[in-house]
Amino acid sequence: MPPQMLDHIIRHGDDNQCDWALKTLRASEQFRGRRSAVGNISFAVSPGRKRRTIYDAKNSQSLPGVLIRGEGDPASTDEAVNEAYDASGATYDLFKDIYGRNSIDDNGLRLDSTVHFGVNYDNAFWNGDQMVYGDGDGRLFNRFTIAIDVMAHELTHGMVDYTAKLKYEDEPGALNESFSDVFGTLVKQRSLNQTVHEADWLIGAGQLAVGVNGVALRSMAAPGTAYDDRVLGKDIQPAHYSDLYRGTSDFGGVHINSGIPNRAFYLAAMAIGGFAWEKTGKIWYLTLKKELSPEANFQQAAEATIQIAGQIYGSDGDEQKAVSSAWQQVGVL
Image 1 (cartoon, rainbow, N blue to C red):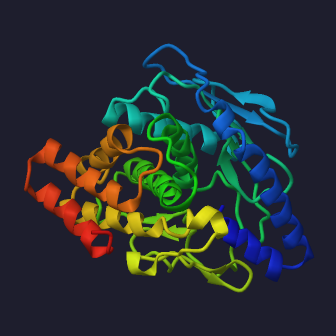
Image 2 (spheres, rainbow, N blue to C red):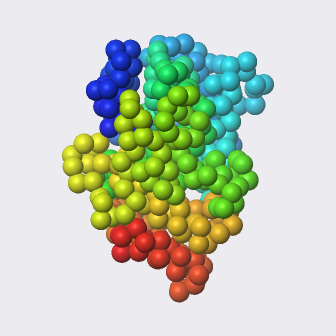
């Protein structure tokens, strides 16, 4: 959940909404801080095997909670449990089937998730060794297992921790957020078997409650257009580098400026065509895995994706031209 959105709720929401937003900010900061401490710990199973474990916090903030569903167990009567289970599986399958990656750490990491975290908790996050999902407050946000791309986004933060380890500030942090959106939408598109032209390119469609003026948390096709609501505020993501946010809020705009590389991926995928998780997704995956340092900026990411596209599909080929053009269109090159 972008902190600027929570800040706006605190300033413009009613007393209950302010309370929910404050609790969400505090809990998110507490648990996100564990990423760097545990990010290199391997909770592995046998190579090539999928293992999902879903726990119920029962509205507490104690992790992991009560075990509800393990790998291969029958579906639960709790829809949040099943949604977390299915999203973890779809994310694992994308990385394994398409990119040959054995879970998010490439070493069989267990995919543990906790649902019903906190009371009216308006967020989902990866804390370094597991996923955590709140139920939402029901007035602004629905439960945070409702959107498969949001869940896959958070799991991808784990993959970033095990690959490029992009610093969570400024342009590296915006790339961190963007890669998570990229693979979040790829999991969603693959689960729906959608081509680039069939996909909606929204992150978190269905996440906003009825009555909120918005369609999603973010739009990769048109950054800055996902919502415009009195309580939530307005989507302020830029679509072009000339509009880059240069302030200090949101760790230097990590959730804001991610709109620029998001649109670059969208433009490249639309030009290349087909299923985005195939050619375009492979370019972005190998870039994240092999080419980026923790301090990588937008220009370095652009140059790396162009290089990888040439290596895979041929120098000066259509795919490389599409990637180069995409970064030029968003003003990075």
